[in-house]
Image (cartoon, rainbow, N blue to C red; front, top):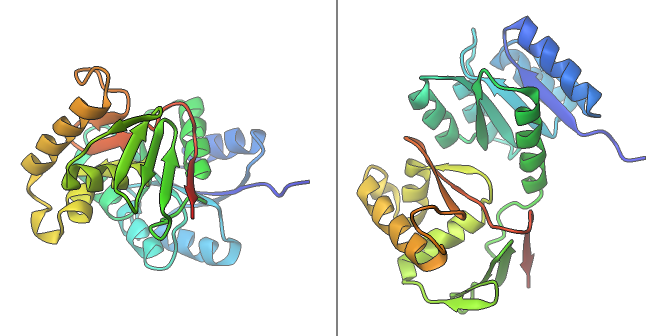
Length: 239
């Protein structure tokens, strides 16, 4: 029998942790709870969860600092919980290493869907040494810098290609403007959001059947972008 996947819930509101713990346990997850970032780090060290769900606003150590501390030594998937109006904190959390966010108030079904998607992506960590990257409708031959979508070859400029590779390596994950600019253009360009708007627009014209209503590169307003690879749910890399 397969071991249950472990989820650590970090929130100082007992009602929320009680509801989430009951809902996730019912769905077959093994759940532990911590009331703040300091307690979460101790539990993480002792228990080694497969995923962390954390609120942003907490005493002693908030969720933002928890993301930074966890990313200093672990690639564990992190989902942050954020109240409406905390766009700046949400962006900071994603830049600090969170994989996704869910806005309060939320339904348990929405959180469960995000958890399933994030856990599916977790084993598919960076595979930059591979020569072929496949995700849904997309196939990228990295050595040749070639792209095919549903067997149709698409010609991209070098920077368009680099941007798409980064998106494909992180399917379903919210990628902030800052993270995308830093990864593709470098640290000196993290505030140059106009670069990103232009190149995302160019990519959409080439890969989307209707750039006005994209299905692959989705906009997260005021935050960044999320890549949906299409029909398949996983990313595969081949030598």
